[in-house]
Every structure is written in C-alpha cells, then in structure tokens.
Figure 1 (cartoon, rainbow, N blue to C red):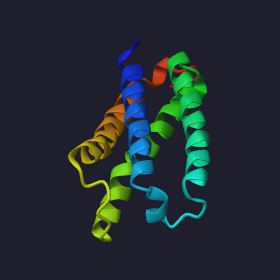
Figure 2 (tube, helix red, strand yellow):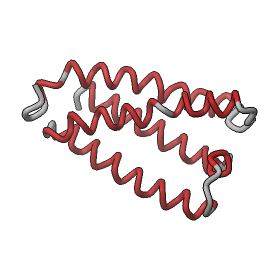
Figure 3 (cartoon, rainbow, N blue to C red):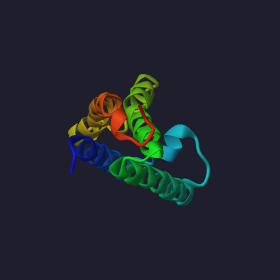
Figure 4 (cartoon, rainbow, N blue to C red):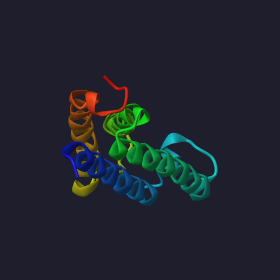
Length: 128
C-alpha cells in the first residue's frame, strides 16, 4: 500500500471515529438539524459510502480517484474549523482530550493528504 493510500485510510478512520464521537455529543443539536439520531445515522451512512467510493478510486488510481482524494481531504479538513466555530459560539461538547485529538488529527492528516495527492497527481489515470 502506497503512502497516500495509508494516509487516506488513516484520515477516513479519524473522520469515522469523529462521527461516532459526534453521535455521543449529539452533534445534530449543535447544527440545529431535525430528525435526531435517525437522520444523523442516515446522513453518516450516505457520507461514509461516498467517502469509501472515493477511497477505492484513490487506491485504484483512477481519474476519479484524484478528485476523490481531494474530496476526502476537504471534507475531513473542515472538521476543525467547524468545531472551532462551535467552541467560539459557546458549545462545550467535544472538550475531552480524545475528541480534541481526533478533530485536530483530521485537519493535520487532511493537509498531509492534499499535499501527497497533489504530488501523486501523475499516478492517476489522466490526472497530470
């Protein structure tokens, strides 16, 4: 497995761990979303499916994989800014060390992933 593939897999693992943590903290309430845990779970099912399809395209180095890697990096990378905004707005959820580490980790791995993706763009079919 190539370095980019490993970084994407780790980034996806962090996002999935964050979403499990988000269910504990009832993140849908922070966003003001209706539907509670049921809609939140359906959203995550759809999001994980999209992210995993993108991951397969990355591993296979298809043309869609180049875009897919940037999609994964972007979606993972917005976790920290969103939660920073929540903190500034007075929300106290996600204030334990593991939650914070996962949130920061998604941002760090997203930057690393985007950089690796850019450098590996010639590996993707038609991506140069």
